[in-house]
Length: 117
Length: 117
DNA sequence: CGGGATCCGTCTTGATACTG
DNA sequence: CAGTATCAAGACGGATCCCG
Image: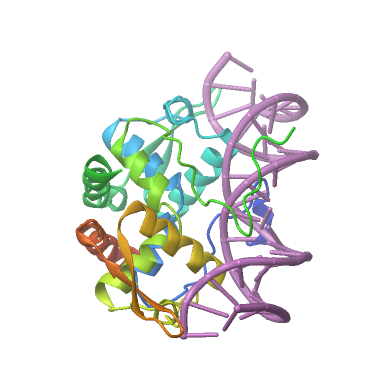
């Protein structure tokens, strides 16, 4: 199976290629879009776990984007996909240690947003 | 029946519409893209001031996007556009107080990027 | 029915050419 | 130098479809 191009649906939002050696640039390659950090907010602060939990948040992320971002966050290691039921398969997306390390960043984001936006 | 008039060259990167009352979501509407925070990094940490300064950074932002993001940051109040010469007009983009308040956010971003990406 | 995948039109991006 | 114009490529978003 080819690893790169099979993903399809709506393609990768950010390239895996490093633009530079700068940590800020690299972080932005991963989370520099409108949804990724919102999903992490939901996971970390609002206890969202299932696909529906995330989907029902007030910002209404489209399901295809949600599906893709979840996959990406799992691949990156910020979330872990855990089956909690098998007859109809059901999954939970649980923040890992790496995922939890985004909390300070989200707090700064919230502070900035609350103060200025 | 166009839903929105296409605005010249490259249109608005984020909508002005608030998606929610959440500070995180609002902050992401403003800075949730790959370039905006990079420009602020250049302005705040690398002393970039002129169009060329930003343009010559290693990540090579396309000039149309640079132009648009600078405009947006000026409108938002994070940068101030100041003429420093008038025969051929030349401008500097200088971080405002509001712009400087992004420093903690950028530091978190760098910490995260350095540690995990 | 829940958890996604697929289709498809519209908008954004990114490279580069061009202008004052 | 400081932007603007152009345009192909691709990301977004919404509706719908599919599978267990």
